Length: 278
Figure 1: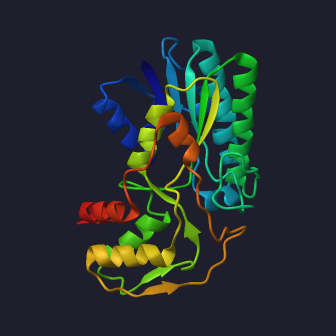
Figure 2: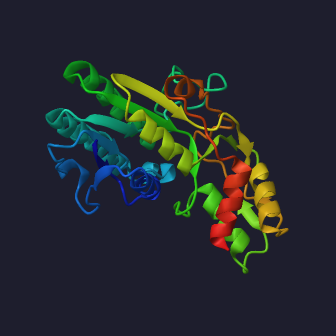
């Protein structure tokens, strides 16, 4: 097994590279300063883990063309490189379900493009389906829900709240709203799912979540207890376009096919983050 990893310097990529090193797997990290649409993949790789992406949803409304170029056209380029090398592709998708029609959300739930980021990933998934069917590629599509862990970009909710807890100038924790519920998965659990998916054949799609949802207030309670700081939680009552009120992942399929289950509870993950901040 020889793995080519795009986006290796990103949040998920850093954790994945650490796991590959622990597993003593041969891998090549793609250069981060090369345009994804110009990236060359060595002909002797057996697997490509494609993590490189524009990922912050609010930014997609400001720069939709960047998201479509990187996430959609970039994925098409990687698929073509994989076809040339006959390599298995693991593609990272996310937020493709839109407002849930039912909970928990399984892999057969309809997908819909409700923001430019989502559109770029839905189109990229369609490319994965086409290349798998017409070029006989093995492709694993991973659909993470809300991933968190060390080294995550500060604009995301959990690091935003954590930064406020540890900022002596902040007397309170300010968030956009306190009621939205999300399914949070530690990045280490996601990386283990990615690694297990390398053995799949054909086209497979897996949800990556915990199977439970937590509100922003739940996060605050866990952080308050873990930090032993009693900063009040305040909401700016800001509404984001097409905001989803609640989402829970159905994770029975990756358990059935791969024997995968998340091992890090949200409480344990928050405690681990607090220790890293301290």
